Length: 238
Length: 111
Image (cartoon, rainbow over all chains, first blue to last red; front, side, top):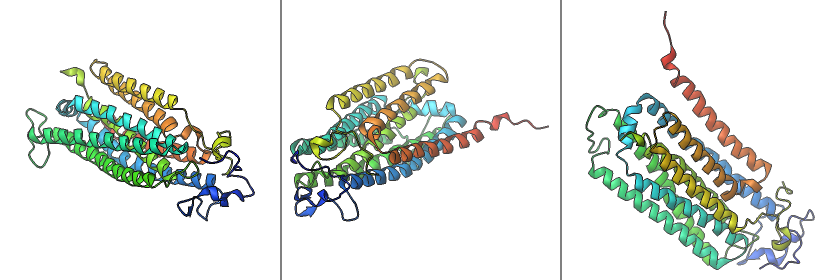
């Protein structure tokens, strides 16, 4: 824990940043291109947010495609949505929200320098992320068995044979892209876990934890929109 | 830059970042769970077009809570706020300009 007497790191003098307290594992917490740790952290946060802006528009393209086709074929979207496992989507929503809580608490553990707590909260976040992917894999398996995969083994009874394929195509692309982001997130968490175990993070320097957390929460937000849009269309109808 | 995080708990940790109480995180978590429950329940009532509007309103509120609290934007610098607002703004352009086309195609009259 840093001594309470350490001068303010963002002090205009800039002298405090070279104090030995800001060195860890033989390297300085402050990269040479920054004036202060605070400026360094702000740059890190801003950089991740600019990346997330591109991600919002990346997923945005799929959401606008969804809107166009849903407004064109509302009946097919209702019929096809009824085939999805509502319990699986609901449980996965709770799992992801819980993983966001453990991630937020992990960032807090890094801020307060509680390494033990940080490690266990990262492990919990990874466990919940893996659980999400497991349930998602079970859903994909069910949809394969029920012949809902366009282009591979597609079958759909009734008048919506053609147009329900559009829904299922969007379902697999949107949830697939989201799952790919989850897998990347788990990779990031694994790296953060190893670095945490090596004691690389302190209350002065935890930017990678904060950045990884921002990415993780973003992936959670995408699912918050995917769940009602894909699983809950016209559920009152049957 | 520099003065962005002022007013934090700088004295204790030597930096000026905000450290949010776990109670706040658990409260946000509880609201997110309630929102999820409401979304599922509302979907089983026939509200006409309001079904989709209700589901999306709850989703937007949940996203705002995640962004403000879990992602710490509440205590972020104005520059970060600008980027967050920018992402929403460009997404709004993408959605509204596309839909003003597709949703009004049925309105056209010839003659």
